[in-house]
Amino acid sequence: MKLALTEFVSVDGVMEDPHLWHFPFFNEEGGQYKFDELRATEALLLGRVTYEGFAAAWPERSEPGHEEEKPFADLMNGIPKYVVSTTLENPAWNNSHVIRDNVEEEIQKLRRQSGRDLVIHGSCDLANWLMQRNLIDEYRLMVHPIVVGKGKRIFQEGTSIPALTLVESRPLATGIVILTYHPAEPRQA
Image (cartoon, rainbow, N blue to C red; front, side, top):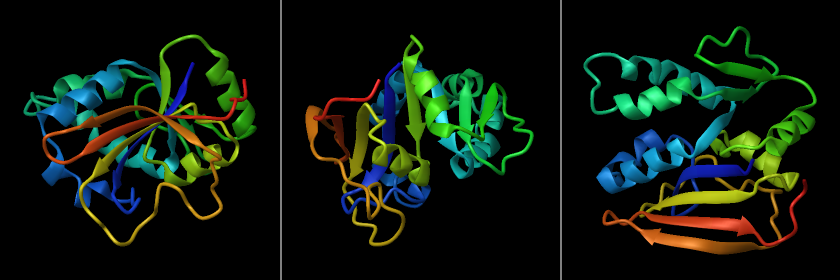
């Protein structure tokens, strides 16, 4: 299974709090991309903070009154979710599993399974931890035409990736550019 990182990111690399700057640039075209991406996802891999935000938001979006979001919400709610956390107790969101110990080994086990993609949304610290261990197979960056100026950045200080190969570049009408990269170095199994 391929481990893919998908992120909303500003031109200056900020990924924190996209709800504050992302929506003016998001349209049906971007929504369809995210829906297709989620349909191709076997499971989510999340850090605790992102998990808690998603768990608070998505279950209610499957309920009446959210008809426009329901198809996406139904997928989010049904898909397996693996949360890397030493502090999360009793995850209540449907189909959630906590990875507390042997994190790298457990993620490697997931990667060795057959199936569609294992996808990380948000989860900046976890994403950088995985990058430092050369475990991410694909980077999907929705670069927004805005400079945020402050916040957690997708590539934190100390994170180094020798080279990336651009495999797709897709501009959207709102100015977002979706960039898909693969690491140019050989991957770990």
